[in-house]
Image (cartoon, rainbow, N blue to C red; front, side):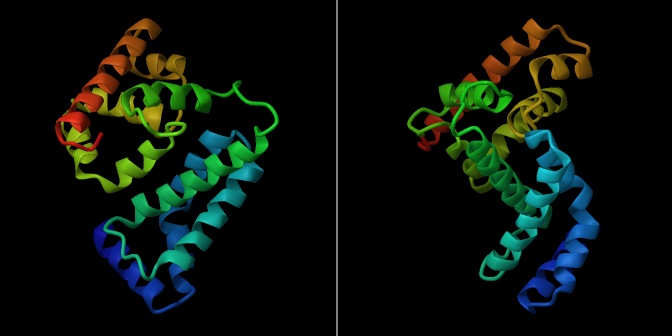
Length: 188
């Protein structure tokens, strides 16, 4: 059902109809706001980032025709939020959960400047989709909660009824498994 709605909204973007923005907000606004709020921890900044994501969609559709509008908008929103975090923290680095997450994922995907390249890979590479699909539902949720939504280890442990150390070990194993799969497929 959402795929049909996505197709209609994307067609409106191609027609340059402002209804595309209205329907995008109606369909995915709460999701995008929650995503940006999780990263930024600030309602005002989250609203700004959400609006910027719609503008980015307007400027990139066309020529892009995303398969999943929700994923595409989330990618745009996430990039904007992370850019804002970088600007806010440019004078003082190292205190946020985002930095810890980048350091963790950089262990699995060497060669990127700061680990941020992995987010684009998730959106673009079939291998990451296959990796996530092969995980158990619990492991997939834990992986995404940490590396997409920037949840703390404590939050993840509480949500899943696990000890923090167990979550750390599990995430380490998942990152290692991801690295091995990407190496095997020649992506790294």
